[in-house]
Each structure stands twice: as structure tokens, then as C-alpha cells.
Length: 518
Image (cartoon, rainbow, N blue to C red; front, side, top):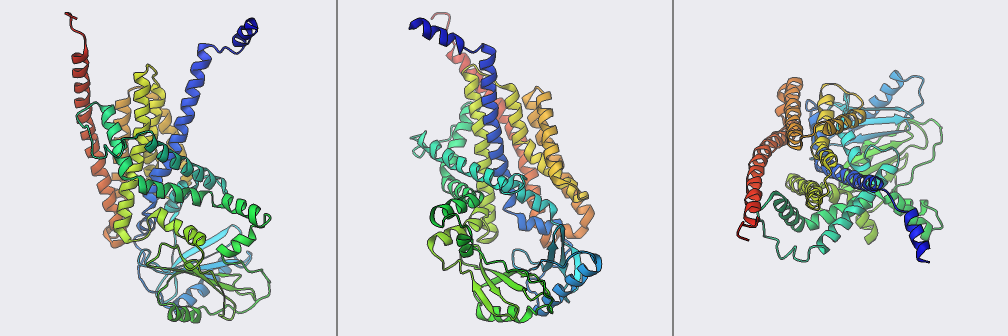
């Protein structure tokens, strides 16, 4: 029997090289997951300001907080005429829409699409079409955040799973440190670099736990909403998802292909404003315009509620046929409807956005230091991963650099931003493997990031002139200046702390050495 066990153990005994390769693969997989988490966090911080970035991308556009219903009607008619003139062989637009001006986005636009054709224009005060809407970089950034640019629903599912992982990490992190709340004000800044990072990691974790849980849970709900929908439909409605979607969304009308005069939307808007003075309309669309199936879908904000929006549907004759009524729905519907504004911080104006940005940067710091702490612990245990450490630097500083490069390219000329970002990230990763000195790599990446942001500012001023200092651009440009200042300060402070930490660790090493007398 013992001989059989010995034979089995020999049979499954792995060589030292195989074990080492397996450990490296395991560590590499952990690094990959951490990298995705960090990317979602850093893009989330920037995405808080996505309406401001949309304005920053085209600061020359005239801004207003009011759109006259007659101008809206003319804008839609001009859009339909433009499509007929420029795409005479194409089918009519299946949907056209209007972006109404709000305090957060004080611009008025119209758009439409059919198959692969999509067009969107800003509208002048007299209803004529202005410049084309061009927010490609902002749209790329938001998609990078919620789907990692993965097509279909799978990207959202991956990000939703990352949100669940983050929830688990927050809870397990608190459970693993019984004294974490007791030491909430403890910060041993004069200790070694690892201890400094451990203390900062834990302190930021304590004070930002409610925020991190809210972001992680809402992110998971948004990302996994399609799967949750399917599970609920399978459990309670025999797999019929339409039973749930009909409660959550307005129904899409059936096409008739029977021509009809284009409907007049001005009376609908005027009546809606009179009957719902507490709601702020920000969007409406017309399905199957110029046919007997045309219907209007109108969305409106609730200024004092977290609920994302309320929606109404009107028929060809301007009669209301359905009211979504999210604000007064059951508790489940209200929770679902509140996830978007709670996740992105789009309530409470600029102070809430700034708070979200600061706390979001805290999440990025925790993610970065969490891996750094793991590397230091492995080093103390005699396990070193120099390539993985440099790869992690390529994540921490390389992803922001690749984002900055994509914006730098887009400011000058529009191109394939997905390819620019992932291509830049790949080149940065290759450089990280080639540069063996961690400190040189870290400083080089940060200097490149600073230079990229400065170039973005310079090119924006060259391209847009005084509009770079208008209300549409000022906030983002100020944030860029703050980012450059903080990165520069971080370089200097980091260098000083590294020298002090090294000196302290050397002093401790000398103190702890046994004397000759011992």
C-alpha cells in the first residue's frame, strides 16, 4: 500500500521548473485581474466628468439652457431634409431624436439613424442645423469604463463581474483586519515604505468604504443587468423577458411603412411643460418618422431624486399612451432606476462630482498599493517577480498615459481610438519589460504622462483659441492643470520619501544586527 502511494506521488511530482512556471502563471493571472480592476477604476474617475468632456471637445458651440418648441420642430424637419439630400438611396430614418439643453449639457442637438448611417447636428436658435456633433473620445472613454471596449453585452458582463469581485475584496479586506476601524487615525509615516503604503491603504479603505461599496454594487448591477433580467424572467415569467422589459422600458412601436405627414412635436412639448412643471425634459425621440407608426418618447429628469428619469410615450396625434413612472414604481424599480446617477455621481452638481473624483482616486490608490504590498510581502518571503512588478507599473502609469495619448491624438485628428489606446498600452507594456530599472521606468512613465497632458492643453488652445477658456472648457482645463501639478508634486515627494524610507530601513537593519559581543 505504501509502495503504491509512493508510486502515485512520484507519478504526479512536478519538477521545480514546472512549479515555478505555474506560480508565475498564477501570479500573472492575478495581475491581469488587478489590471482590469484598476482600468475600470481610473476610467470611472474620468467618466464622472463625461458631460464636461463632451463640451470640452467642441467648446466653440453656442450654449443655451432653453430650446423653443418651434425651433425644435424646424430642427427635426431640417434633419429629415438633410438625410434625403445626402443619402437619396438610403431608407428613411428609423429613429430621430432631440437632445434638449439642460444645466449640465446646455446644448441643443438633433440626430437620426438607420442601419449603419447615423447623423447628429447641433441646432441653431432658429432651427437650422449647425456643426456635426463630435464626442468620439468621450464615447470611447465611457465604453472603455463600462465594457472595456468589448463588443455586445459581454463587455458589460465582464465589468459587472469585476464589480462583484470588488465587493468581495472590500468585505474580505475589512474582515481580514479586525483592528482596521480602531486604527482609523493611525498613520506611521516615519516607518518603511511598505508600512507607509499599508497604513495609507487601510486608512483610505476605512474612510471610503461606504463610497466603494456603493460604486461596486451599482457597477455590478448595471453590468449584470441583462443576466439578472434573464434569471428573473426564467424564475418568474417562464423565460419571457418581455414581461419585465415592458415594466422597465417603453415599448417600441411596430413599423407600418405607410407614409404620413411628419408629426408636430411642439404642442406635445408645450403641454408637457405645463402639466409637469416639476420635471425637466432633456431628451425625446420619434420612432418611424413620416409614417403612421410614428410615436414620441420623451424623457425627463427629476431634479430632487436619484431616480434616473421618467418617460412618457405619445402617439401620432399627440395623445399620451404610456407613462413609465419609475419615480413612483415599486422599491425594486426605484433601486434599479437610481443606480445610474448614484454610480456616476450625477446629482448635486460640481461638489458631488469633485467628491466622487477624489474618492475614486482613492480607489485607484488602494488598487495600486494593494499589489505593491503583495509584491513587498513576496519579496520578504524570498519570492521576487521583477517582470510582474514592472508590468504593474505599466498598468498604474501606463493606462493613464494610454488614455492621455488617445485624447492627444483625437484633439488633433479623429481616428480609431480603440486601436490607439490598446496599441499604446501594448507598447508601454513591452517597454516595461525592456527597462529593467523600476525607478527609471516609474519616473519615465510619469514624465510622459505629464508631457502628454501639457501637450493636450497646448493643442487645445492652438485649435480653439479663446474658447479654451470659455465655460465649456474651463473646468476640464483646470482639472488638467491640477493633474499636472499633482503628478509633479508626487514625483518630488515620492523621491524624498524613497530616500527617507531607504535610510530608515538601513538604520533598522544596522540596529537589528547582532553585536560582536553577542
